[in-house]
Structures are given as structure tokens and as C-alpha cells.
Length: 182
Image (cartoon, rainbow, N blue to C red; front, side, top):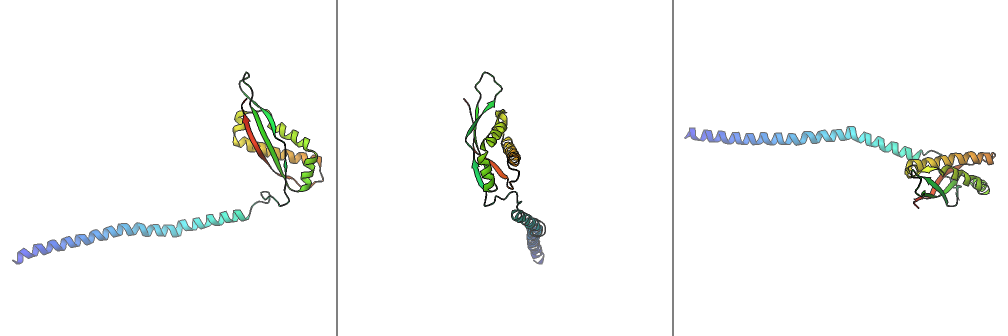
């Protein structure tokens, strides 16, 4: 009888020891990656995220002075204008670009010069928007380039018209921008 109990007890010991080994391997396979992930988070990712937040907050605090619109800024609106759009088909009617521009001036003195010499600025804006193709006018990059060009040339014109003036045109923006097929 002693021989009969011995194999049963050995089987029970083997099954319980294999169950313990299985639990240890399973626990280790879950705990090791979890601990590794926590370590990577605290020592690699968290410092990078804190640095990114510090950079973005310093960027918002240190906004360029050229990007700030002062409280004294005045808007000058120009009349709605039309320009003919160049087409490849000579027999089809040319579409029209209908647009309206406004300029943000640094102070009321700049605004009064622009209002007094509005025809010069209107002619400048019209010259910049004339003779463009539909492909150009549909491109948002070209639209932004037209606004930048208008701002630069308007500041040059402002300097010619009133050299003693200290202010500038801060921004040029579209109030209306539509291409109409006829």
C-alpha cells in the first residue's frame, strides 16, 4: 500500500508545483512589461511632455511684437471691387473675382492718411488682383501671398505719401472673396 500512495502524492506535488510555476511565469509576464512601461513613462515620456508644455507656454508668453495688434489699431474698409479672371478658353465668358479688402492700421494717423489718399490705395489693390488665373485665385497660398504683397506695397506707398508718419499698416484681410462664373 505504501507503493500505491507514493505515486499519487508525487502526482499531486507535480501538479501543484506546475501550477505554481505557471502562476509565477504568468505574473512575471504581466508585471515585467507593466513595470517597464511605468519606468519609461516617468523617465522618458514625462520629461518630454513637460518640456513641450514649457516650450508652448513660453511661445504664447513671448509673442512677437509684430503679431500683437495694439489697442489703437483702426480698420479701414475699401469698397467691394471686381477683377476679371484669366481663362484658357478665349470663347467662354471670363469669370469675375469679387473681393473686398480691409487694412488694419497701427494708429488713427495712418488711418487718416489712407482715408485721405484712398484712390492711391484702391489702385494699388486693384493692380495686385488683376490678371490672375482661376487656378491661382483658388489657391489659399496665393491668396495669402496677395495679402502680404498688398500689405508690403501699401506700407511703401504710405511711406511715399507721408514720410514723417511713424505708424504702419499691420494687416490686410479679405472681407469678401468670391469667384463668379458668368
